[in-house]
Amino acid sequence: MKSSFSIGRIKGIQLEINLSWFIVFALVIFSLATGYFPQNYPDWDPVLKWILSGIIALLLFISVLLHELSHSLVSISLGIDVRKISLFIFGGIAQMEKEPDEPVKELKIAVAGPATSILLYILFILLANISAALGSSEVIIVLLTYVASVNLVLAIFNLVPAFPLDGGRVLRAIIWYLSGNLQNATRIASSMGSIFGYFLIFIGIFGVLSGIFISGIWFIFIGWFIIQASQSSYQNMVMTDIFNKIHVSEFMTDKVMTVNYYISVRELVDSYFYKYRFASFPVTRDGEVIGVVNRESIKELNKESWDQTTVGSVTDSLNDNLVVAPYESVSEAMKKLFSNEIGRVLVMDRGNLTGIVSRTDILNYIRIHSQFNQ
Ligand SMILES: [Zn+2]
Image 1 (tube, rainbow, N blue to C red):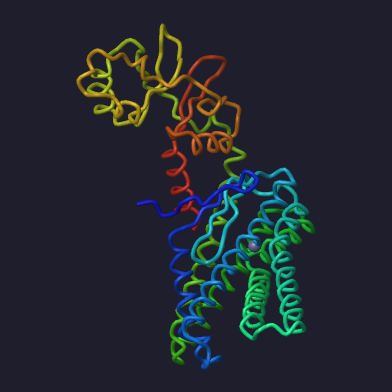
Image 2 (image 1 turned 60 degrees about the horizontal axis):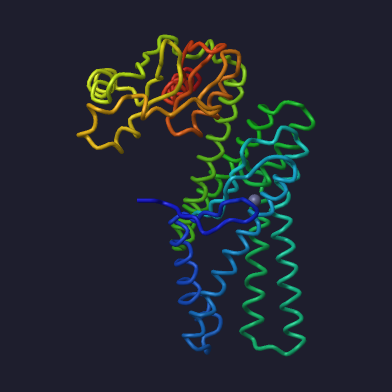
């Protein structure tokens, strides 16, 4: 089952909602309609309470979206592409194509989100005041004030200096700017992230013990999430740093099994796929590598046609995303093999196949590295 689906595009950025978001959506509506409103405005019509709760949840959704969108637009304006924004259980994430390469860029991108949330806060407070002055109904004023305060909370929470929250990114940018050392800056900002995460868990446990059950669990959940995210983003950064320094030629597997262009698909399946269990093979014609054949393209074929079909007719020809040069960095290879469908790249040296790098190679390397560097 798909865990998220696209709801459209803004300026080339794909907007995606994770299914977990609907849990939050339902939870917000439910707790407002059955908790907050009945407690504070007992004489309001129950139907009105539900409608109002729905509108607030929707405005909350738009607020989070605008927050993420502002990160993305600043990022794009600084030359770092954003492919998609995912909204999930704790809010949203704008997926940047790469990390900023300068502290000032990181600072600008990080500040954009909370700045937007603060602007929204001011906007909704203004609207609430104007409505009050014009003598609008209490419902409208409560609605506007509530959405305003949600945006304020969004801004303040994100400004906590705990990586990977926005405030943590600001902290990292400042340390990075002052020390010139990105890895160190990330380590410090991530530790702050973990400390903040444990702090939230502590508050959560305290809450649960004193009977504030739902909020307590919520704090524990968010705390745990921040700890995970801070640690994995630090490890990511360390690994990227390592992979930037290793050349493909030192990393690749250099004995590569190739398949002849003219053999049948039947022979390919029996003598290669079953025997060696790789997901794909480079294809050679008259001694020259001309493309890659992978299991997925065979799956689409009718089995009866396997004997008559040659490997050549199901071969994907080489393209820039399938090939790296031996002197390039492993990071470069990684970008390609995580974006092409076959999960591996061919290492070509002036037209000759000298090796191959696969996703499994990368993941195994990371596993070994983390075992030796606890
Ligand atoms: Zn943000």
